[in-house]
Length: 136
Image (cartoon, rainbow, N blue to C red):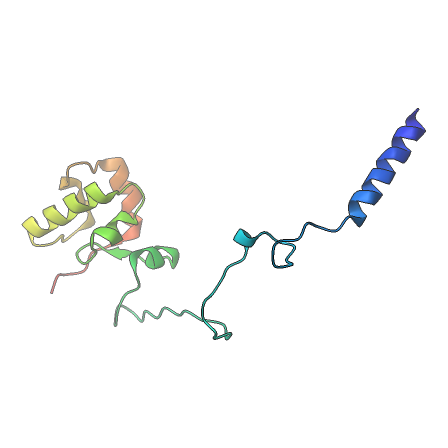
């Protein structure tokens, strides 16, 4: 009994391994949605570089800055940039901008606690991700 079962299993695996994969409409073994498409005829690879040299020059977008391990400048970030921070949604980002405008900018990260909706736990999460630079 066990021998028949083992022979059946081996035969099934052999047939399965010899079966070709299903083909998509254009002869590809992968489904259409799994391929990235480009309408460009340029086939050279695209390289994206972000250069930040010691605070001089333009800063990268907030999400890129977070991925690069850089802080987001609290006095210059827009609502979209602030929304990239964990725990900050669009409503809280607008509150931060309103308080910042009323104060004329933040001088320390601790002043962010004055924004309604930011408590000590959220402030502790945000502190390593933020930088405070003077407003020009």
